[in-house]
Amino acid sequence: MIDFSIPPAAHQRLFGTAHAFDDPIVVRLTIGVGIILLLGLSIIAALSAAGRVSPDLRRELIKRYLAWVVMTPLVLGPILAGAAWTILLITIISLMCYREFARATGLFREKTMSALVTLGIITLNLAALDHWYGLFVALGPLTFVIIAAVGVLADRPKGYIQRVGLAALAFLFFGVCMGHLSYFANDERYRPMLLLLVICVAINDVLAFTVGKTIGGPKLAPQTSPNKTISGAIGALLLTTVIVVWIGSYVFNAQPMGDWRNLVLLGLIISAAGQLGDLTISSIKRDIGIKDMGTLIPGHGGVLDRCNSLLLAAPAMFHLVGYFQGIGVEQPVRILSGN
Image (cartoon, rainbow, N blue to C red; front, side):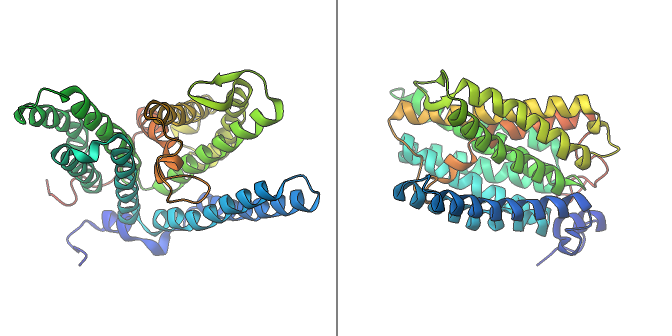
């Protein structure tokens, strides 16, 4: 049951589905996503008709395309539906990412550590839902303290660094980093900001791949991700920045963040952080000797394989926007726990 004691402004932000398209840029971005999906199908059909792709590659492209067709409304729907559903979506995705990470690294065998990470992720997202920034910030170091202390109380010094280190890293990635996506939802205009981030991170991945395949050249990190090239990284950095400046000029229109210099900085940060997030998870996969973190998404691997670029980009964008204009500064705080 919805708590109707929530302040009206917060209630509207949390559950205001009827106002999802009040912001014109949200309408444009939503239509743009639909157009991109249609273009993707057209490109696959054109390449197949021209004989430019092999039957195996065609099947792989179709598999990936259908996965995007399913994933897009699953992500876009909650963002449009309201902040509460957005935070719920991010919490579920964070827990799914953690599950894949825990199974891949073996951390799931450490039941206590795994329970602490799971509880930390849920609690941090609840702090975001409550718009309680003090608790949101404090939960990072406090959860680490608890993980480190509980690891000692187990009286098993053998393997302490591994289980505590993995648990702390997991909480930082899937609690703290992903939690910044949730905290965006405390801003009245969270929809365009989140859409900007998610869309541009996805485009950044595509551009890095496309430019790299087109130009080729030296590898960026051959031991970590053999398919990535320096040309792809630079091309994505430049082109994604242009796209961020273009979309951001509408998202942050007449706001401090809308200054073109700030938008250029935002574009560079989103692209660089997105690529580094991808490489970070690739490093973990190479370290433990696996190709993908999971198999849930056909053609894409696991949930973490698709969300890796957001891990570093989300907090980077959050704090840059927060520095220039704040996030949710006009909204009621501690809307669930009270003042």
